[in-house]
Image (cartoon, rainbow, N blue to C red):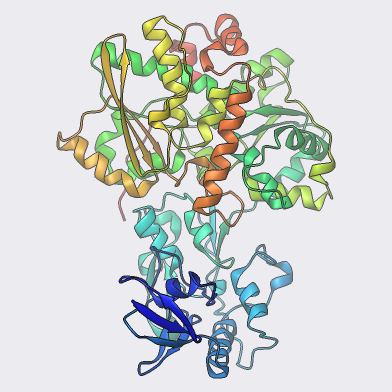
Length: 570
């Protein structure tokens, strides 16, 4: 059909909105509450346009029809948009100088675009108390603009439904039902709401001050581990293209912050594959509970504990790579270096807000020592580097410390959906067939679809696998398994879209396009590694020989495995 926008003829299709039609001819209509295919409700009224014969309408919700004549930039439209924005600002704190999202805030940017220099209305930002009830996420209701983007992402993308609009009109507030705190509901702490929020109404709990304190404590030996997804995302905080691998520069930067040792979570990802691969083979051989579900994503673990606790025995008992690293740092590494475990502080740099929660789980300790002491997100590390004036790109390359910094390419791809499955298959295939893989890339498990399936021939046994990308796709698969419609042997679940590269602690924005670029960065790192199979990691072999004993043995189980708990649904 043909419509006219600001005097320009435009070819549009049924089902498109005015906003989409305008975008395809290069006309940008400002938005605030809009998220394509997720939150298209016209709540903020910023995208208002004038449609001949139909008055003022929101462009993100109004469907095109033959012959529409639309104005997007008339003086009255500009006045109304500015007025709407001022009304939103009247209920928003004017504290940009100290706000975490300053210069990366959609409300701030929009105010500049629309020329809002002052707010003519009385200020009332609510006076609400912060919700700091969880170790992962802080809710600041005073900054909430009620766009409902977090509500839609939590429901439609993640399938959790932890947030709702409560009450009405001026008293409306976005929160868990009945204004409960996040700790009291079935929030999985994945942090996807943080990416959805256009302001700083939702943010990670900042633990940087805790790290500064231990770095300045001469009695503490502070070791750092860096997750694979961090190395292809941190550069975005310093204006590098998404997916740029800067591993060596991150190592040097963190050493300058004062950490005693810099290790690599990719090492413990290799360790996870060895243990989890052994667990899968044992279940296949001994008719154990199948399918085996991966256990490295803490948001997924909390999700299954809340919503599908009847399947907990299907979870791998392996701790995540983060926790395995901490357990070894306070046992094997402590003994090797002659340091008392209680004097070692393990800090993690993770792409994930749920990792903060995982570190506090009561199960995550050995002999009274917590596996992990402090978890920082990618964003928090960037803040620490900026405080110290570290010019990341001018730093020389650095190397991870031995022994917990020796890694393979298989561990690197843990950070992308399908990566855990691919890494496991590289090891399991060679263990079962006793043949060396000619091609290490399992392309059938790669991609960003919500659910992917494949069948792998292991010496005559057909192993059915599935990869679930994002929690919003879990229910469908788990229901099919329970009802006998699907039979899998091994299932990978990543709670965040794209896997860890799309984690709730990654730089903002994190879009589908950016996730793809970060994923390419990890695959490139894997491709460049000399060793690309976890079971061939020489330090892993050495640790089993000299310290852990047999794979899946008693000592390995005590240090590297865990249990789970049923949680209430609310």
